Amino acid sequence: MKSVRAVAYITFKEGIRDRIYLIFFFFAVVLLLFSLFLGMLVIGDPNKVIADFGMAVMSLFALLVVIFVGGTSFSRELSKKTVILVLSKPISREEFMLGKILGIWLNVILNIIAMAFLLFLLLLFKGSRMWGIFIQAFLLILEMGILTAVSLMFSSFTTQFLSMLFTFSVYIVSHLATTIEKASMTLKSGLSRTIVKAISYAIPNFDYFNLKNQIVYGLKVPSVFYYKAVAYFFFLFLLFSILAMWVFKKREV
Amino acid sequence: MRKGFLIAFILTLYVGILYENFTYKRISMPYVYGGWIIRLPSKALKDFSLGYQNVIADMVYIWAIQYFSSPEINFRTREANLRKFFEAVWALDPKYLETYSTAALIANYDFGNPRLAIEFLMEGYKRNPDAWELLSEAAFYAFKYARDYHLAHELYLKAYRINPDPYLLSMAAGMLERKKLFQLSWKYWWKVYQTDKSGYFRKAAERHLYKLKAKMDIDRLGRAVKEFKAKFGRFPLSLEELRERGIIREIPVDFYGDPYVYDPETGKIKPRREHLWK
Image (cartoon, rainbow over all chains, first blue to last red; front, side, top):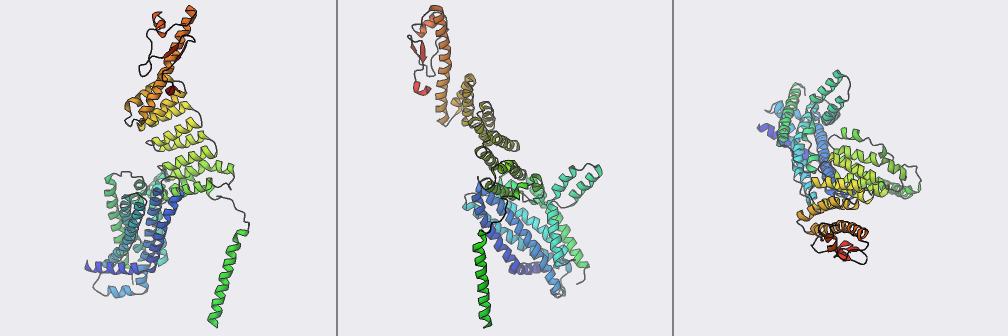
């Protein structure tokens, strides 16, 4: 566990020094401030637009951090052969991979928390106390944890570019699960409908981590949803982390 | 030497950029205003929003506001695209109440179509059955612009059932008054009078109750006076005479218990508080 912590810490430190990370963070802050301007353009409550836009920026930039930092960090270790140096120490491949996942995830968490605070302060400045933003930030942290594991799983057996592409594809597909299920209803044939429906259940469903709409309107979400979201996170996070560790163990470095 | 040349070259390039920037507006480019957005697919947008439906709805809404306030776009094109625009927003974020109001506003004030405004607001109500504000707004368009007092009364009453605000009931009562359904209107005003705690609507209700009662009583008394004249060939000397001769059972009094003012010369009856009447 100590070695996992060490790898995670170094990855985290490396991550926040990464230029891409800082550039993304800078642009996210600029866009969050831009939401104030968008709020002025609507007829009605500007805070709704600020919150919507802010939460979208939060999740979009968290995704970019996972894709780029997650995609480059591991590949860099492989191309610079630093991984050989680390693995020559008394540390297993599984521990190394887990440390990597947690380190990158910590980077994303820092990014999300900073943006959530900034958004909350912006709304506070506009006279709205929207605590729900932190709930969405928490769910986003869970979602990005899964995606980090997915990203490193792909990084451990493909190239940097392909890993980014695959991670992005997983993100898109996971957000389309409900749409695919809905699309299955429009099919006439019973068999094709069953197949498409089965696909919609087989893929991850990231709608578990999306409460943006309910939060903006202050709607009460049943507490069972949160338990299920956390449980869902554990299932997927463990699955992809184990897969990443397993693939990395089989790989030659 | 080489460095100086490089700096001069960069500066020349920048001057060129500045020139292009200044002359950009002089080129007349063919352009269709808002051309790309008019083909917005409403349902597809929601299905492919990847969890960002709220922010996409906001963007389409902001675009819609810009689009409908651009006189450069042909008036008829704008009118034809009104529904398309807002249906895209509603498919993405059906709870966004302001958008229904804005669509109604554009339909009524820009295109002079209060029926369409009411339709939009009712669509919002269908999607948000608690949104009494939309019903109240629709009622306002029905009464003020479509002059459909029957519909306005129904909508105000529907809104009142969701939110028992005396304002809504008093508006419904007012609509009935315009339809000359005084009995029912009296019933609503009476409820407002009894239930309003703020005092504001109670005062208005008091005035309307006075007016309505006077109107109904004076109508009745007027008929009785006519009947008296037909029987006896003259106007009664007082309202009391109507009762004595058995034409009416009792003489009505106004809302405050005061008798009506009767002129035996002309046979006309007036309320005592005429300032409330007008």
